[in-house]
Image (cartoon, rainbow, N blue to C red):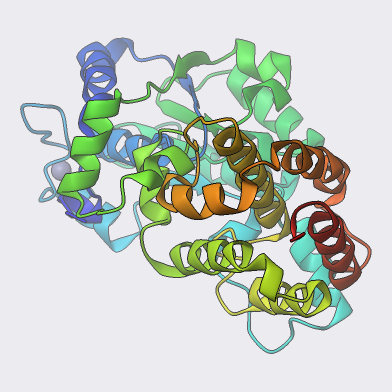
Length: 358
Ligand SMILES: [Zn+2]
């Protein structure tokens, strides 16, 4: 991964037209922008670049931050007084180790997936110190993801958006803009993040050294998301998952449930986004791919396992589709299972009943 100015990697080429458009407007930039696009569309990277560029004293010809002025130095050290980032507490720093099993720790974790009113109030208090930025310049606020704001936080922010301070620019990022208050949406200029074309995406992956092109399909055509499956926790999790499903007939559903639970609880799994709903989602992709292959079509998500899928689902397309439908109800409950192990056992028994037959 190439790191550029202020520790940020370059924005991918398919986002450059959007970049040029925004940088070209400079002084006429609205005070609130809403970046919309799925996870992995590059919103956060883009927003960081834009924030840095707007704070920088000497942006380059393309409008990117210089990396050398006092403001850039501040940004790089993570202490710029006019740059604020609001994220759910859970996304900030990984939780302390050792107390993960106490009830309080669990409750705090559950709460912290939201952006709460205290965070918005503390932001507003910081913004009230002086009417303009420290050097008379702009102040930048990134809120990611904006839909994580609970009702109280959203209403508090709404007031700020209604009475814009000429020097503060809000960058709201959202994977699910429909979940935002309509009044918040209407006070922002909405920008939909573009997707790359197939060839552009493939070239970017090649330049990143990602050798498995199937990952692009697995990430629904989003190369930045595909990269997260190329290395690290998610790459291992995906490999283990496909391996288990490929060898299903040699497995015992209850033992497998125990193994899956252990992997979900392993260090770093949750931080990487490997959680129960992820597994259900992968399972549905595997089943729908198998049903497609049984009909003679190409798999969409597990193209790198096309042969294995074919061997198993050949002549059993109906059963694979039935399994897919069976676990729909599991998907709806996956965010809050009463007992994760029982949930996984029940899930795997359902799948085994349908497709692990010889
Ligand atoms: Zn600079």
